[in-house]
Amino acid sequence: MLYGKILYPPAFGSTLKSLDKSVAEAIPGVKVVRDTLSDSREGFGREVVGIVAPDPATAGRAIAALKAEWQPGPDQPTSKDVNAWFKKTAREGASSSSLTSYEIAYIAHVPLEPRAAVAEWNGDKLTVWTGTQRPFGVRSELAGQFHIAETDVHVLMPDTGSGYGGKHDGDAALEAAILARAAGKPVKRNWTREEEMTWAYFRPGGVIEAGAKLNPDGAIAEWEFHNYNSGPSGLQTPYHVEAKTERYHQARSPLRQGSYRGLAATANHFVRESYMDELAHSIKMDPLEFRLKNARDERLRAVIQAAADKFGWKDRKKTSGHGFGIAAGFEKGGYVATCAEVAVQNGAVKVVRVAEAFECGAVVNPEHLRHQVEGAIAMGLGGALFEQIEFANGKIATNRLSRDRVPRFADMPVIESVLVDRQDLPSAGAGETPIVGIAPAVGNAIFDAVGQRIRCLPMAPKGLPQGA
Image (cartoon, rainbow, N blue to C red; front, side, top):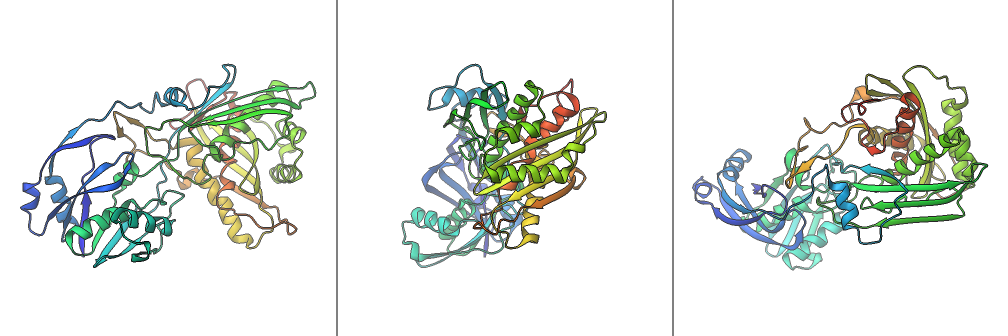
């Protein structure tokens, strides 16, 4: 088996003008490979330049020895001005100017194991071992790349090393197979952490706008909601509204983007439940009572009440720097409600306690389900408070773990989960929906603690904005 490396461009959209491979090819056992991808992948271009070598250290020396000249790509927005770009490039009409605007940052999946693959050819038949969430999709990609029948491609899936929606495409598998075919031997291709956080796809960023009108009794009379780029999952409000407009506006993304746990439901729930809180406060109504006032779906009401009871919402006591927030929602057949308590000191946010009620029909394995709920809360804390991809000039700045703030053990709150078991209903999935409630519950608790409404994810990457 040989080891492979890929020469990536210095910035997204750059194309190769010239390549001097003489120094690399002079290294014993090294072969330089040039090929093309059959489909034009955003950020990759069509050309593949890589090397194979007898060991990882030699592979690293050889890829560094390649001397490439690149043609810069077109100008792209940065993470600081991308939200205007989403509105500018949206394919559908804009929303009204009176709506409240929220911003959602791109974030990386940060799997425990960066993607990896081993590819081996036997004549025109291909076998690939790769950590993937979508082995049949990877098989189709490989068959299309090499113009062979899918029956001649065998994809074996060992332990995936986590994915969170980030390992659907066969990036490493395609690279390994291209290199193995050129080398005539099996090739192993392991992405580095920096490659994983640069060339993989991200959870989409976006701009989301919300607006509403209330009747004197607090019932929502009109509702308007627009999502630019982030996605349509979880777009529809679960609350009763007579007149509503809810639209997803597809826009051009400067970064590769794709599936992430919960898809866009996390972003849409953050905005909707934050804005629900704003509406409740505008009429001086308790956030719990406001939600129950507008929730006619009995399953939604049940989880809201269950979370509030477990949390002790009605008995909560306000103290300096401490705040309480609540959020609820529905997605993929499951209902969720989350209550959070936060402590804010000198702008630093600590989530102290979380109570979350989840209902996904009949509970089959309660311990496994509880782990899904708790894991989703842990993962959701990162996107809520810290995680964001920063980029400029076609380059990712947060391209390693020392620059990307993911949740740590010290960030974890006390978690109390309530499993609402509906044996009269068929079971639904539980791997995604429990993540959608934590960000808005924390945001609403921050407002309760310090009186500052944060309308962006993440909310406190380096502490709360000045003045909180």
